Length: 133
Image: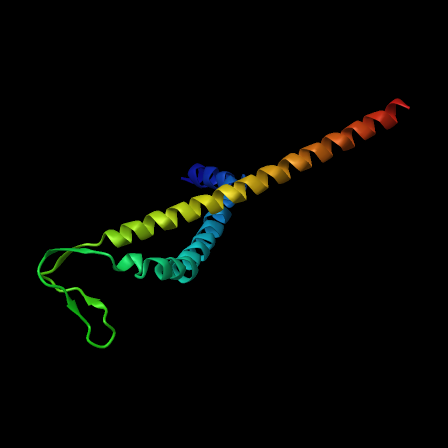
């Protein structure tokens, strides 16, 4: 058992586990930002064009849906079955925006890494040129 905990400690100390944990925390925070961007900014703008929020789009498969008389919100009754395809459209839009944001982040990071490699190569060349003089 002691060996098991030592191996686990070595695994944690390598840094890969820390990198993974940091990535998960940042990814979770990034996801909240993207969800807010979609829900609070993009979808209201799309609703202006479409006239209705996508998440409210549905087809009644069984029963009669009831609405809250004050807010006008759809109440979920036990005997009502809805095909809420609007939620699916919403999920697709979320996915596309998140994938695009990740693409941009990777593109920026790749560009930064390439510039760093070029700068590093120039420094190495300068050092080798000084040594040959």
